[in-house]
Length: 83
Image 1: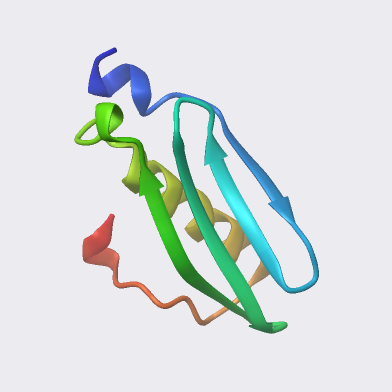
Image 2 (image 1 turned 135 degrees about the horizontal axis):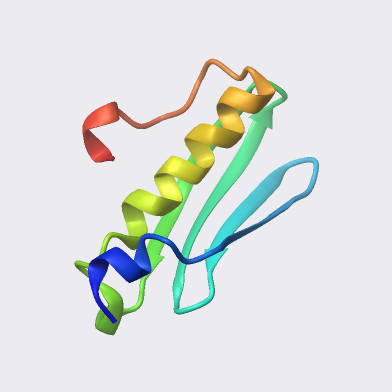
């Protein structure tokens, strides 16, 4: 599968009051905690070895940034140069 195809894979999202998870079905996930209502703190990003270098981690970070924008949260613990 090429990188351009991977960047268009659907990202699923699940969230509880204190934590959440973004997942791409081929073996990539980003998890975060919610230590406060306005804070989403990324604590884990994993891409299976066979899918690394195909743009999946940046896709997960774009998904959490979009979620943050939609919820108007102002504090995420990563810099723009990660994406």
